[in-house]
Image (cartoon, rainbow, N blue to C red; front, side, top):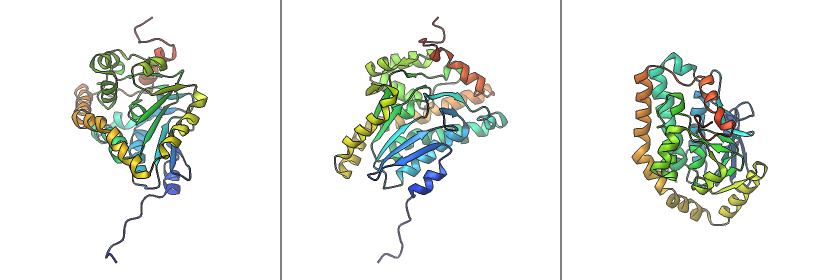
Length: 287
């Protein structure tokens, strides 16, 4: 008998309670897990707190061997179109500390954990319009509501688009399309996202989760080792993209914040940046 015992892995009922203010978790007996990001039960309102909670959740899910497939989505009819009214007070109070501790470190962990710490297949479900869609686009499979739109707001709020969305857009769209999207805030409707290869399928919003579970059932039809090793093959382009691109992009973005010496994440700033998306326009400057 060994002189030491294994450390117990995380227990679902414990972390389900721990993360309930950020993610509603539901797991079937076969290990297919649904994680719905939310703020007060509705669409995610970006904050320092939920930015950190995402990476913490992904690492925890990856450490639980009872999880077999992750379905990741948002709540309500939008994914993320707003920010918490007080969600970036830490940025305003101490920009230097925020830039490293809550933006650079947490942000890199978020994307890296999705690709490296979860050795199970992932299905991203774009339930509605929003920014910071990289966490759904970088899942192994991604499906999208037929009335949703994807865009990046960084340049429009005087921020460098270097915190992961640049990696997702460049990998999926190619250099020229990604450059246009990142500099203009181009909003991709579902048909365009499907045509460009950003997502795999589009469906009416009310049918998305049923379809996600159908895909999960298909994935679960093969042995556990096959599922997990296949995932490692599928993710090789993302792993390479992260190694080559992510840290440098984040570093440049944070240098931009500190060089300006000003916070950019006010609620009015973020919410108003998406007005054109809700209005159905392609870009903020297209009338």
